[in-house]
Length: 483
Image 1: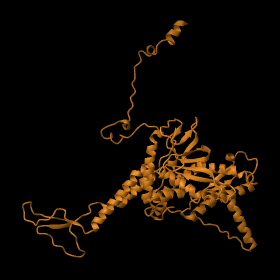
Image 2: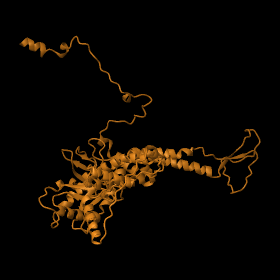
Image 3: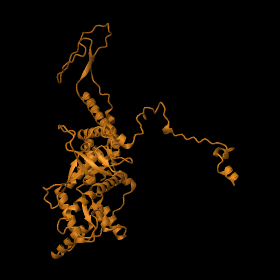
Image 4: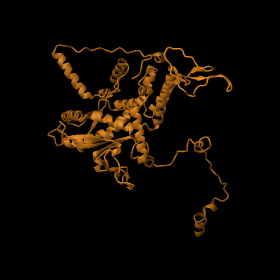
């Protein structure tokens, strides 16, 4: 027995593998090789963690440059505004789905009044714009006694600069630039500076705000990321390039339009020519002939810059800029002249999907938090809330956003009728596509029909005729811009 153990268990691994041919596995990736051709391109690649890469100073520089471009570049401003308007629109609408239908309508009505009083839609658009140019947006849930509604909840928006550690030399592994995390990695507390660091006031006085009262909206691009960077970070050099090229093109066009030139001579250095002062300017009168010194000629400055490629250059740059936001070119440029119907529809599918993802993130991070805080106060207001519904966060509800109009309403109406007739959709889904509550719309329609019957009017019922589909060649020739 001991001999068997010695031979099979205690025998060294190298003895048991003796006699077997050894194999050396080699793997090679072209992208992992460094050569003279790619050395400079990969010079700044590093292995920093996401929070080390997004350090306080790096985020400050990116925020400042992003804000500068948005403030001075009309395309950057337009792209930011368009994205915020498309995501938020006129604001989200709440639909409660508890078993008490009457309580649902009361809650929806009161929440709509409160949202209008605090200008919730405008604040959500500001948060979305801040996420684009700052990388993150913060809001603090506060009590505002000046509100005309019974519920005094309000949102105070603050810039990312105000969430910062007020102590120099602070070194806590659970802290990341003003945010304290618990052992599970959840935000526990925020340090909020009482004044913006860009103010002229001196001092770093701060308040410690619990995480339950702070809304932090940002997109985590890497695991473990705790603070956001501007969403247009990768496009910042392109914005600068676009502005520089536009100015250079303008200077070239102005040089060609102005009557400016130089004087030169063909005479050899030892030849005879009247002497002139080098670089001496000569004032020219409009619509006059000019005599030159003996032996000298005048030549107008020529604009050698290839302005003919200006439109193509701008299109490609804008297309690349908008790609980091999943935005099609015609939306970013505000110009669909080069699009046909099919191209517009295809490009917008990706864009609309991106908008739905943004709206879903805003529902989870912002709106559900706001609704829970709103219900906490609403429980103190009379008979507004139903009883025995459990924790507020578990109350069934959904949010409706503005829908997107179809470029061909007749074709969409026919498709909707076909889906309803084949039972492949529901009224709730169809109304949700338009950002409407199906119960509210049906109740309104019932009131309209009842009033029409009372007045002796009969609702006109018409059957839509199918709209013929356009062939691919007709679509490609159709210059109609997409949505």
